[in-house]
Image 1: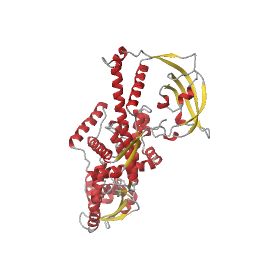
Image 2: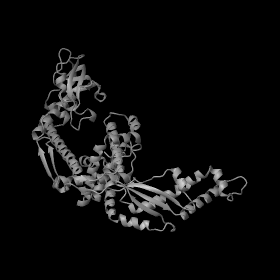
Image 3: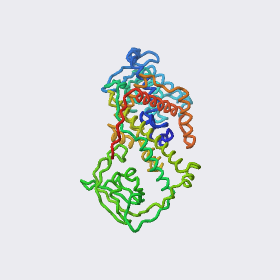
Image 4: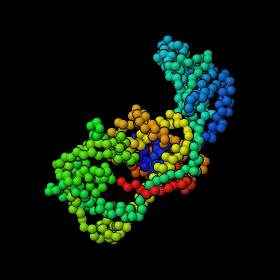
Length: 518
């Protein structure tokens, strides 16, 4: 939800993490508040950038209120502006600050308001402090004026003054003005290696009506287990359908190195679904084990992207399992009386029908998710674009926030633990560890923006308002403060991404193949 992306906002800024997520979830995180709108403005501004910059550069250095700005193209998407503030502006800013300071400063031996500059400067702690304040008053409007022709061209918040405070103080002169440089990233030009209208994706089927019935039966059994009594098993080993409490650890098969991320203590395993919810093959290892017994066995961790943590995917391991407790279920009788406790008046057949309908809806949702994943990857492969570091860092920081919120929402960590991890340093480490993955995702996001612009895919005001009210209600219910303007921008981005995904699904080729049997 939008609300989830705000939990650690104070420490790690948040944004919508990916266009695919927007297509999958009503309140999914996305790439950046207002990012697509800014990208559109940037592309529109590219055609006028040179003229605007030339016009600004032509302004005479001594002109009242004018800056001298010279543009330098850097490798990649970088740009540098060499800015000179006229001496007249420097003198005006210095004089104004000193006059204001003189009015409020009392210097021994002088009438108030009559002390010379040297005496006032000494009184307030030296020239460095004065220049620091004068520069603070000057630089913000100067940077804004220098960057104005590049609005829509510069990657938002990528601009920064390259000189430090000491260098700026040394460069400040009442006779010669102030020269400094601004570094920023420009929006990268994007081209299509494959026209987006010709994209094709292949996805595995999420099932059919027969699998819906099977899923409904599994859910029905799960509901019965939820109301079952547990009986301790002491006279036999584990059978399928039992509930086991185990301690689990693993080490690399080749080196014997312990895999810390794999350790579990007192974990409950329902052997009817443990191969799916925990590890494929785990139930075969457990079969026949009695309470108190330990067992070593080889096992290969799954390679699919859903398996976490990522570092364990595909690892060949030696697992150690201790069966601490073993139970069997004393299930309630499967009859209309029990079914009516779940769905009054529905009976067994009514409950089954409802579960089948739910399974079908989940299957359709899973198919949309798979198609969204496939198109996100396809768009990223189809575009050719250089990614500025500022965009990569922005995306990575927001993805880190999303990951922290996932850990919080799933109960893996409490709020205090998440806050301790929500630091710029750890976010930077996350970006470096996921660099290639983030580059792929950023290419996809830029491609989605280009498609939305080319096809005119914009949400209506009615759609925006309805979604905004729903998202805002989430915050209200959680008693969480939020920035209404940024939330509205996120809503627009989510709806816009949904429209791009719908366009791709309806206009490009989607091939569905049978699911691979485990």
